[in-house]
Amino acid sequence: MLKFVRARHRSIRSCLLGAVALIGACLIAPSSRAAPYDALDTKAGGIALRYRVHGLQAMENGKLTEAISYFDRALALYPSFIRAHFDRGRALMATGQYDAAISEFTNVIAAYPEYPMVFAYRAQARLRQGNATASLVDFNQSLTTEIGMGPVLAAVIFANRSLAYEKLGQSAEAVADFDRAMRADSGDNFHDYRILNDRCYTAALIGLLESAQESCDESISRHARDLSVYDSRGLVELKSQAWDRAVADYTQALYYRPELPSSLYGRGLARRAKGDTAGAAADIAAATAGEPHIVEIMARLGVAADTGTKPAHKA
Image (cartoon, rainbow, N blue to C red):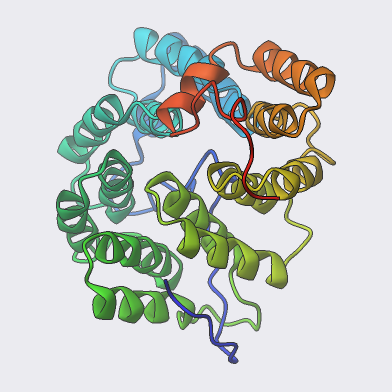
């Protein structure tokens, strides 16, 4: 568990798309080496690019199966479309398919080994898979690369590497990395609540619920209007069997995104635990309509389908 110290740190702006996207949307920074989509100069390449855009939109809306389908269609047309491989890896990771995600990130690294973001994503997949030691190797490798590295990405890496250290029981290293993340400087006066959100979500997935709760609480205290944090904290409370708080947070997350499958499903499970069978059935049906594989996805993320069927012991 890491304690927060309020200080006048500088902010770090990440490229997050919310809880399902994780560590950032910025894959490849401009460089002297051509970006992968520069080669999409054929009709098939243009169609593949449109499929990728549709896939990213589906990911943003939590429709992960649909997103993977779009990336598959893009790659069927243009197998060397590196950005589509990367995005497919992100979507697979968000669904808990860690081996497949690691394979995609490894393919991208083979083509573009100098970009730190790809190593950071593979590190995340390995950490969530339960291999904290292997994740440290990738986190460390990401910090040795130069293209695209700056205070934003470094802060993301430090914040998530701190969880690997915490999982391994190396508390001093965990605290040091978290402090490095929170002190990253990008030239403005606001803390980066999104990095805290990302850290909260990952901590919840790997069972560090106390650290997850702290990170989400701190993120919300810094920017309560970012409703994606409430989806993350809802997951923490669902796993903690804090049913009332889970319902409240998922409801908040759904305020502006009423069709987000993860929030609908999580609220449905929490409502069922509270005895609201009608509300639970409605939420779970709506979640399944938006993401047909939501039950399977959430099970891979550690939320069993029978969650809430046993007597609650927390409010």
